[in-house]
Image (cartoon, rainbow, N blue to C red):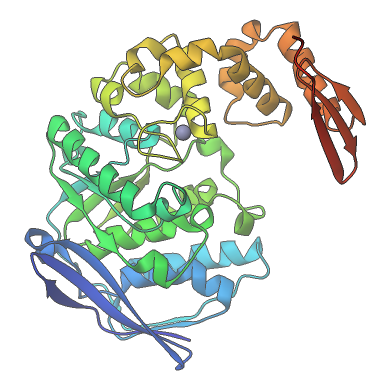
Length: 405
Ligand SMILES: [Zn+2]
């Protein structure tokens, strides 16, 4: 049993923290904090247990814990979880626990500031959400705030570069970008992801919504842009082992209440269509960041490769010379095309639209080299210009040719 105590607010110099004690099986005590600048303290929600139920639901289902809360839960949320989300998840993951949530129920409206928000990670999904809703023609759907949260995204990558290092740098850049966009940015911090360790890919919807609901007295609408897939990819099959964005059409609808509506932003578009939309956006030309390795786009990791090739396929790459090393790309384009061909052969759905646009450039030589590489793994002896290589199962030996004098 997870026992979630009453959340309270604690001052920490010029910051304010929403703090909550959590007791696990009456044997282990944890304290979760979520921190904002003190000017945003008034939006921290002590009146509901919603944030903690959402944030810990997937964890509780996987570790077979029920949940008891001291503070009321919003009736809409509890109804949606009990009647729709939990039964659906159990059906397609029999190992998931049918979590029972015990909490006082309230249907009282919790007033909010009418804020409309989205995250500013500077990735394709994030920039698409901003581009679409900054000046949209629906007055109550126009963005009022941006935010950047520390609830797991940084821990998933950047281990080599340094998690604190990248976080500090990305926060600074996000603040610069927000100033140019012309919206306030709320930078938050939390120990949530280190206290309850979860696989980010499988649970990011839950941890991101934890951050949103901690500030539920600010938000009326929130656009969560996380997925490179459009709604046609919705599935619950084997969801326990897959990117949780594949069922956001269900989960975000269940997390929404009559006071706070969450959208799976960009679900009507594929990643390629989103890229087309932001390709001429000046903020994207200066701030696009997709890299999973470092603060500047490395150009080498799979996300960098995917984005460079996609921009090239659209004929927009030259506009992104500030964020990608285009000289390196042009010099090594054949290697990128080889990578694209390999991802096509591996049935990578995300890269397929780019492959279809660039396949004319994938020459017979590139294709032959792909098959040669595959074969090479199994060749017992290989002679190249520089080396003679022996491949004897576990034993691999490489000799360098003697240089001719
Ligand atoms: Zn990269």
